[in-house]
Image (cartoon, rainbow, N blue to C red; front, side, top):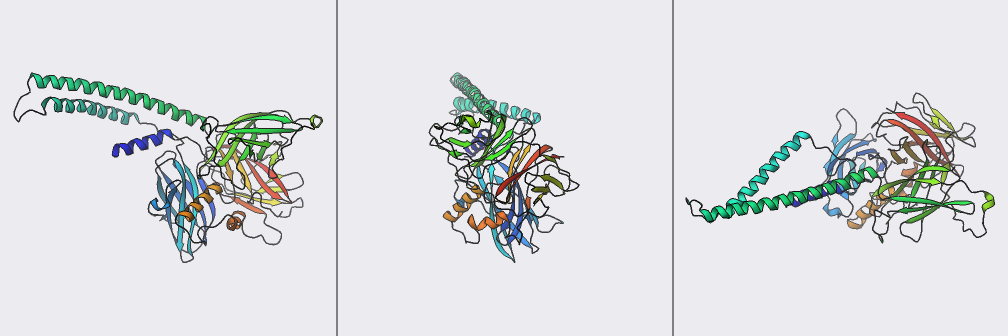
Length: 513
């Protein structure tokens, strides 16, 4: 039984595909309500599986509280979840708690965070993906010790089996004769051959698994995505195929809508991030094919970053490069063309001329066409793995607060990309987790064990949490995005808001220490 468990763990470590919903940015952040409690939750997801997730919960209510965690795995009955783990108060802090949870398998998980106190009891599901993102090196000293132990086991196995074959039938105090010694040698030789063949076969299996693992680590997002562009009249139509190589030929890509869209596709101009769009392809009859009308982005090379959530709660970002042909001339419109209507929530910026270098010591102003201004509020210097304090204010052309409108159910969407392309994240005021995955786990809990209405809220009842409280007269004009930059480097941040019925995009450049 122990051997079977060890093999299962080893296969899990080697076979994990390094997909993730945000490239190079695996930590998950949540900010919102858990029943009557206002909380901010940070989950540092382990880079290997099995591994320990670190959880930090800041309860912003003044009342004292207790916090517990439970990991819930997709495909596993809620009744089989482990017992609650109590979070420990952080010494010297008020209502700040931390704890650890073991994630044992490659799977979609939800961390059930429960807060109890005089104000009442609340629970929130924070979905995460448990996958292998790195490979731990084997220390040379440990390798030498394991080699010596392996030789001892190899020789010991031969001696034990040979002795059993040659001497097991001898009477006490009897010495082995020629017949017993012959059995001893034959058993030793046969055992040695079998063990050598097992070691050779095991080495080949190990090398094959190692190669697959390293290949997956290099390729990045899962599954594969490929795209091509055709011209129909005055339109350029993007055709996407997802999972052609990584999924079986007839396997359907079972997706669940996030913000009402199956796919959120970002196109970023290369190599200088000179253009940007956020569009939403629609599925074709082919189970893995999607199409979208391209906005008027200039010709050139673009990186595709395709966000989606699978039906069982696992979210991922598939990536690839694509070349966009020139924008067709209006004169090329054909009466036989069948135009594909663009998604009304598509948005884009065809040039990065409006990009502004942020200034941490004061407010940073980005002026947009039409007079709208988006201001990145002053904050402390940005450092990796520390709260970035992403707060923005929107003003109209006269400098007055501009009332914000929900954009796909949120008061803001933002994309973060490191200039070398190794870090990408899709942010919202409530966090960077997949809300489609959160809804999946909430429905799973309600279906299997039921839950009071105050605990498992519907999507519609969470609209206020996502968008903030009802605005006062004049409308809400500020947003906050919980996030920590995962590594130092130069980043570009696209902040998207909707005001006056139009989606507007501000571009900020920043450096993280």
